[in-house]
Amino acid sequence: MKVIVFGATGGTGQATVRELLDGAHEVTAFSRHADQLGIRSERLHRVAGDALNPEEVERAMSGQDAVVVALGVNDNPLKVRLLHRSRTPTNICSEGTRNIIQAMHRLGVRRLVVVSAYGVGETRAVLPWPFKLAYRLLLKEQIADKERQEQLVRNSGLDWIIVQPVGLTYGRPHGGDVLASTTGEIHHNTIPRSDVGRFLASAVGGNQFLFRTVALSG
Image (cartoon, rainbow, N blue to C red; front, side, top):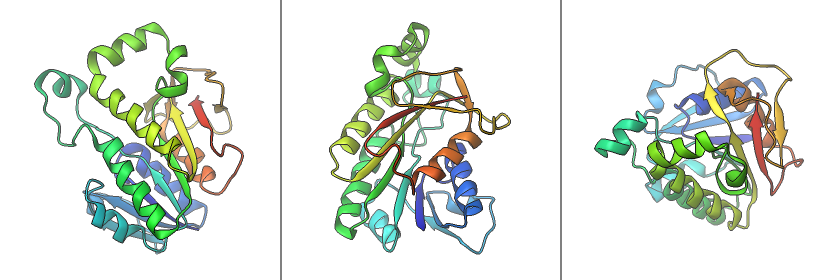
């Protein structure tokens, strides 16, 4: 398959690109900093672009079979919350996804796999209270943006899957010991990005979780 990954230079995006390449897919890595992606493959195409620019999004998506959205704000949450300073706009998830969905409709691309966060949307009610407090105090803008993003995906009319990982780490992969739950159940509060990338790569071609929100934990 030809798969485009938006947010390809973030930790989860890079892990997804690697897993897709390992699965013999042809991958387009879309990011404002695509030239900084330290992955080499004849099946990898780097596209420098901004997900907030509809024309750049649509141009990069032409000819794709599936889309993975791994957009997010990587800045220190304290700086974003208290100083309102961020290198990435805090509406990147919702507005970027809006542009992506519109381009998919125009180009006839159906499969959409989106990385959200545990505790958003369908899992909001089961999020432990210390994390609810952290979301409210430190990540209020980012979580509100994720809520808008998920609503856009559910209303998109596309073949979507929403993936909600718990706290992301750069730890060693768990291998097969990963829980993918559609009821909000989790094993641990963290999961390596490499495990998330592997799940996302499998989701672009599978139908097990179609039109479902999947909580992902180690």
